[in-house]
Structure formats: structure tokens, C-alpha cells
Length: 413
Image 1 (tube, one colour):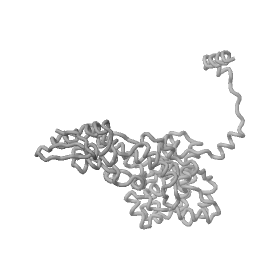
Image 2 (tube, one colour):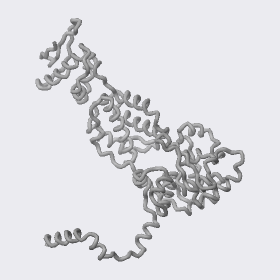
Image 3 (cartoon, helix red, strand yellow):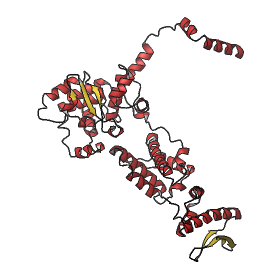
Image 4 (cartoon, one colour):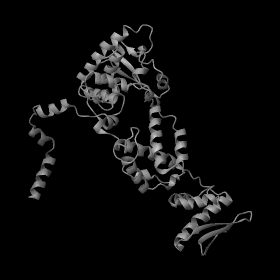
């Protein structure tokens, strides 16, 4: 049985093991109220350790709130064997081992998020010891002090929000496994994961200029598909083979490595008119070739791409050089903004349900990451004549609304 005593050095707990060995653990100098609370926690841990009892759920919660120094004392005394204590380093490693089902580019983002997490908190920080206030400090550090890959200090709001979101996912995973009981990242406003300042609508005229100057037929088709079909470059076009093309129905099967594990390995997309001449020109020279972009695939990094790491297949720099040679200032997110521009043009002509199917994502994803206002939309809004409202129809359809509004105005007066 454990007893609580006090001497000149402060409070301490004493107990005997089942083998008769006498043990003690000092709490140090603290108030009697705090000493009694620590005594309650430690007594339950002693019982669980000595008698092989399951860990008390209340003890788990207490441990997450105890000072790390006292938790270290409990660990040194061998009282945490019944309650698994996980550090941030252990947690991130275990989570990554369980996350191999994610696409390679997603895994890369998780690795980066966890590197920042470990840099700030340290590998040995107990997972359950992080509080909401700590996360607020971490968020400020990400926004103003964290070192970026380009050597700048401070991440963008969108990037910081993504890192905070992955950290929250880590904590939710360990809550499900009953290792911890709270998620401090749920109590922090993470901010938007969308950086609207990097959205740019790329007019079709610019792409036509680039297509005219493109060094090969494959580049001409790639630019046309990116801007008019909105394919994900490089994963989708580099996965296309010539048997993906249905010439009779003028359709093309677009393989989608990104969504394959979600049960959507491909989608059928019309061969839009701006794309067809480039596709036909390349087909005339395709005898004996399997992939549509056979020549562009001849690079060492394509092996990584075929294994799922499409980030290694970097076409961005070559496209950037082509844009500069054409006398056009490069825009942010070169390939993604071509995809976004394609979607906005398609939405102006076709039903949204069809467009989302052709582009290969949901309406929520489109609103969050792709929607943008074109200059043509603004010009139309400020110049097009508006038909006068049919007041008779308005009153007939909703007379109650007009009555309520009128009475409200009367009462206000």
C-alpha cells in the first residue's frame, strides 16, 4: 500500500512491491493539494504495474496534462509500463509506416509537415503533452520563423495550414488507437489551405503562342491537353497509351494515378477541337510506339513516376524556359494554373456535372482550389444589359415575403 509523507525536501510517495522491495518517488516541494493529486495518479499507476491491471482511462488523461518532468520521474520509476507513452518522434514514424497507401506526392507533403513539427517540438516531446497554447506558438513559428526550402523565413498561410492539418490528422490517428485522449490541433484556427494570390487565369492566346514555338509535336499536344483538357501534368499524360484514344467516338481515356486508389483509375474525356489536330499529327508518326508521349518519357525520372513519385518528373523548368523565350512573364504554379484555366473555360460552356467528371474532381475541390474569375467574366458583368425584373411574377410567386418586408419597414418607421 502506498503512503504519502513529507520531509524537509518536500512530498514523496513510498510503497512496497509484491516482492517486498521498498520504493519511493519524490514529488518535491509543492502544496498539499497538488501532492494529494499526484499521489492519486501515482497510486493508480502502482496498482496497474504491480497487479497487471489495465490502465485507468482517467490516468491517461492526467498523464497528458502532467508536467513532462514528473512524467519522466514516473517513467524512471517503472510506473508507465501499463500506459504506453509515445513521443512525437515515435508517433510520426509509426504514422508514416501506416501511410504507405497514400500517393507519393502526398507522402512527400506529410514528411515535410512532420519535419517542421519535430523541428519545433523535438523528437522526445511526449505526444500527449502538447497543449492548444503550444500549437498557437507553433503556428506563429510556421508563419514567421520557419525556414523554407528557398531559404526564406516564414511559410505562406496556405502551406502552414496544410502542415497544421497533417499534425491534426496524426493526433486523430492516435486518439483512435486510445494512446491519447485529446487533439490540441482541433482548438486552433488553421487558416485557409488555398493561396488565392497564386491563382492566375492563363488566356488561350498565350498557350497558342507557346504551341507555335514548341520544340516537338509531343510538346504541342502536352500544352494543348494541359490548357484545354485540364490534365494533371505529368502523371496523367505520361500514363496515356495510344489504345486510350477512341477515334470513332472522339473520346480519350485519361488514366488518373492520383485517384486510382480511390476507385477512380481513369475518366473518359472528349477530344476537344483545339486538341484534335495535335493528337492526329502525333498519331501519324506513332508507328510502333506504345505511349502517346513516348519521347518525353525518355528520362531517368520516369522510373520514379511509374512507381508513383510523379514529382520527380519535373517538366516545370523546361516549360518556364519556353515561356521566357516567348517573351511572356512566367505565372505561378505553371501546370496547375493551366488546369484551372481549362476548367473555368469549360464551366462557361458546359454543365458543371460534365466538367467535374472530365476534370476529375468534385465540386468542393473545384471551389476550394480551382475557381477563379476571368477577365471575360468581369467585362461581361459590367457591360451586358440586364433585363428589368418581372415584378408581377415576383409578387405572385412570393407575396408573403413582400408582405413581411413591407410590415417590417412600417414597424421600423
